[in-house]
Length: 78
Length: 212
Image 1 (cartoon, rainbow over the protein chains, first blue to last red):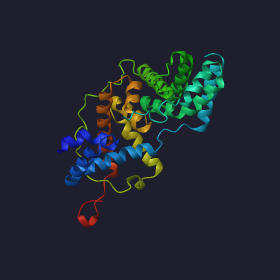
Image 2: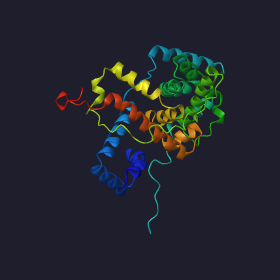
Image 3: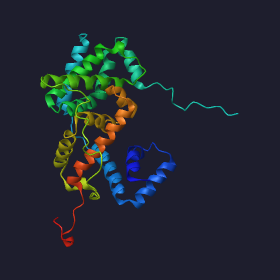
Image 4: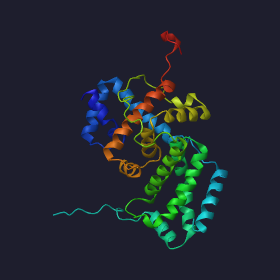
């Protein structure tokens, strides 16, 4: 496997949508290629960080205000 | 000869379907439940696209009102949430167009860039890189980094990786093909990785003769 072929499979491996055989080939490539291993680990970490950190929170008071406004309009038939 | 058995749960109805049916039957309180279930997600998506807090508030309100008005058009062959996200994305883009009157805004904007398609920063990261920053600093880094992505990549990354839609649902919500979503997702992930490397790369120790 070349680095370009590895890159083409990166998302599918991260999202776990590849067969065991393909996964094994990718793992073998990473074992030999330190750069691709770094790209794999840091890309996976990128996704993990964005998933686990709320960067745009909806504050409770704003949430209530929006909710009241939406439901008031809906009750009037919008 | 064995026959193919249906996967358990495949035909189970999504709980939103019953809520939507109740709203259609005139039970407004069922819509209250749907709003509370998805308001945070709609607000986040609107904030990611418009990058403006006031616009995100307006979009959240308008998206839920529009969904309520158009509920009869909801076919039920997609999830209510995916349908709602599509409305929220369209409302967000309309809001952006109003702000940038001279410039068309679409999810196809800026996607021609080659930046980040080939990884260049190959330094490994610290074991728990986020531990080196306070929550406030980290949130700022993550916000600034994702805001720097081209618009057409950012929205795909947010729906697929932050909000957890499937590739197919993301394609449906954005009116894109599945291959287009896949290609943008890879580029978005690689660009974010590249940009976050500036903050998260492993620091060399002074003993290596390299600045820390």
